[in-house]
Image (cartoon, rainbow, N blue to C red; front, side, top):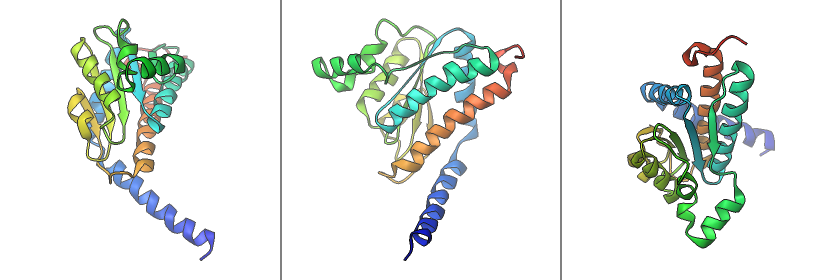
Length: 201
């Protein structure tokens, strides 16, 4: 069997997985996520983002998109911090305390009432993101979960869970979807400037 034939078959199957996930997205929950983010930004509060592995890369990507892309196209300046990007701080916490505390320890002394955190996890069972969500909820803020598989602990811990179930261990499609959320929301806000009361560029 030639590469083209096997690749075409795999491509078709992979696209079906993505289509299935997209068809499961709850537009009401997605609306709540966007409205919560808008409220956070308009109030001058900070959005924190965290995740592990591929989800850490998505968190960093979100900081770029919301800190630069939105600012560039709308002149509005959201406050966004990826808790995944300070490698020395993360390794210090992981070495001296616990890897489970790498995000919570960064929130301490910074997280304020009205702030928001987005916790990204395919499984929903990464203890460090679960702890971050709980910390936000307990300190006057809110938490949003981007989660797949069977939801895990994060599904229950977050204030708002944008949950799309998929087979355990099938990381690619669910991580693709979480990146789509990033691009969907950032482009939506740039097109609909009025929701942030942003003057025309």
